Image 1 (tube, each protein chain N blue to C red):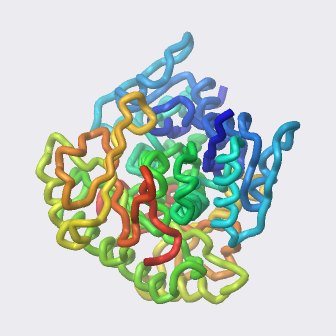
Image 2: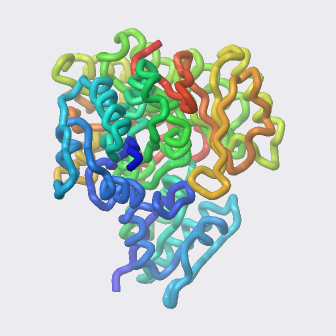
Amino acid sequence: MNGWLVVAGLGPGAEALVTPEVAAALAEATDIVGYIPYVARVAPRPGLTLHPSDNRVEVERATHALEMAAEGRRVAVVSSGDPGVFAMASALFEALEVRPDLAATDIRVLPGITAMLAAAAAAGAPLGHDFCAINLSDNLKPWPLIEKRLRLATEADLAMAFYNPRSRSRPEGFAKVLDLLRETCGPDRLITFARAVSTPEERIETVTLGDATADMADMRTVVLVGNSATRRVGRWVYTPRSAP
Amino acid sequence: MNGWLVVAGLGPGAEALVTPEVAAALAEATDIVGYIPYVARVAPRPGLTLHPSDNRVEVERATHALEMAAEGRRVAVVSSGDPGVFAMASALFEALEVRPDLAATDIRVLPGITAMLAAAAAAGAPLGHDFCAINLSDNLKPWPLIEKRLRLATEADLAMAFYNPRSRSRPEGFAKVLDLLRETCGPDRLITFARAVSTPEERIETVTLGDATADMADMRTVVLVGNSATRRVGRWVYTPRSAP
């Protein structure tokens, strides 16, 4: 039996947003590897071993998955959203880079609905023109680089999606982001806080930067900031296709 | 019978990448509205009327869809990929803005797998760190703005995804983009051309900017450019999670 490894995106939460491709891979897998809450989204069944692990051990987790696939297991490394967006796919290739002995592994990356696009759909179309996706966690990059990117993205008048706006380790970071954006974009720019999109706890809230406060985001929130033309129509928020 | 309107993302091409949510909406729809090749992806059945239309009539198409929903029809406006990324969702809200009489329409935007994320998954994880998505078509924005955004995105060291890299109306534009990127990123930066992702015609090709030529992209290609740390591991290309 030949082993394989898939890095599968489970989407933002709802079963109806899991692609058939991912569902089929999970049904054939012998082992599920991932962060505890994501592994918990896969239903247990006979013959399936669950390997939940804690946050911040992504490369160790990926190495373990590669080793199991090399032993002939069918391994699904699961991520929330899309595995290529601030998730496990890069960690897998980082692990592969230091373990060339595992280079022959049959690997596939299976895309998923990433949080920012589910959030945008729930809010309307705030990412309907050029946009960027920035991870606000400073675990893996220095704070000044985050600030530099925010300033350049604002100068480019890109809409923005922020992942990991708040973490326990630096609760003050997101307040600084809001201050910077108020300075560069002005107080009237629209900002959408999308929490737990597509789950029963979903909450979508759009306010102006002037009214935004850091506690509107938590670890389950993705934040969308419009460009200078983003506006409301009825209960929706959208960014026109044409440049401002 | 109450009408409704969904703006549904069909994903990049493969049936296995259509979400169950979208499949369910298409099964309940009475009318399918969209650009000719996307409407052609929906199987005809009794009771379903197909309304294919040409490119560049997005707002007219959206208005027609809103009018049908107001008359009690169940209308699916279909887009390739994700409807919120350079697709029909923004056009729908533009139409709604000029037709407040249709504001009560029951509207939902259903996300899909957008081309850049399917392309990234096929190539590895080139968008695994902060990135931007830029539509290179200058139908809806002036060329100098595209150039400005490319320069700022490069300065921010964002990975980049380009939609609509080449069009019949300005075949020279993409060659100018490559020249600009060679100047700002240097010749060794990796660039991935992903054509017809997830279809039988899929072709994924990664080269350096020094070796890239404009004819590597056509209208079915999405282009991904790495950041300064993007590299190859085996047959894959990926961007590490840590900042360079």
